[in-house]
Amino acid sequence: MNRKVTKAIFPVAGLGTRFLPATKSIPKEIMTLVDRPLIQYAIDEARAAGIEEFIFVTSRGKGALEDYFDHAHELESSLKKSGKNELLDVLRGTNMDSGAIAYVRQHKALGLGHAVWCARRLLGNEPVAVILTDDVIMGEPPCLQQMVEAYKETGGTMVATMEVPTEKTKAYGVLDVAEDMGAIVRAKGMVEKPKENPPSNLAVIGRYILAPTVMDNLNKLKQGAGGEIQLTDAIADEIEEGRDVYGLRFRGQRFDCGSKAGFLQATVAFGLARDDLKDEFADYLSDVMAMRKAAE
Image 1 (cartoon, helix red, strand yellow):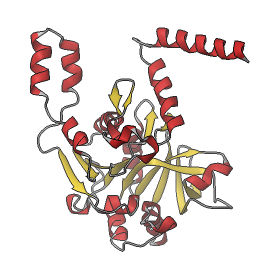
Image 2 (cartoon, helix red, strand yellow; image 1 turned 180 degrees about the horizontal axis):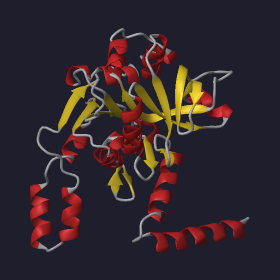
Image 3 (tube, one colour; image 1 turned 60 degrees about the horizontal axis):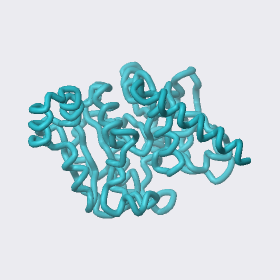
Image 4 (cartoon, one colour; image 1 turned 60 degrees about the vertical axis):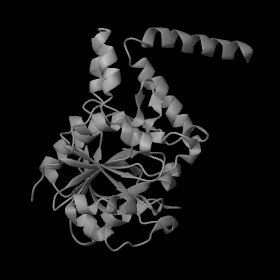
């Protein structure tokens, strides 16, 4: 089977209600961490992993997200005339080649599995990556690149995993581990948001490489937790049918930018990682902490 991963699905149909009122007029995926939209972090990670075709599963009100990847000819011309070549390079880095992006609509919010299923006609009989833009991962090499390298050796289906406190496993899909090989584990089961007695503390994070047979499982449109069509269930079906599913303990720090606290934490981390910002920003944070301590 072909183990080269060249396509990625980006489920971006959500309404972003946790970030209202900001998301009343703009898609959550183009809210910015420092000076880059969430979607740009995901695209850059995919490119680093060798992804060539980008499939966005969208919904109504996502026009600004689609426009983001268009060439801004007037702005490019203005920057060029002004000699702002560094900014011009940054801008051109957001452009996508014609035909590299496809958009499909998810008309009803029926879960992550359903969103991935909506892209089925664009995939063919080959593996596909899935990237959830809410999960921003700071790592070197980027998380999906780590997964692609591991996948070349394992094949099957692969998910990104990280260890979480047992009491928080109820918020995640959780692996039941058959074999622990260090960075890579082989799963014998997966449970979506276990209410009690989780099989491990290895949580599934928003990066996946799916074998083509996962799409066959999604074709059943089987409802799972919350009455939704769960991608975790379709992956668990792979195990039940005797096919390999692996988890990769990725190297890096994950931020849940689907929550306000996680978004703020990511903003601080990425701000402090920038050479042009870190000194001034660190001084400001130190002053804030000093003032808080004095007030207490």
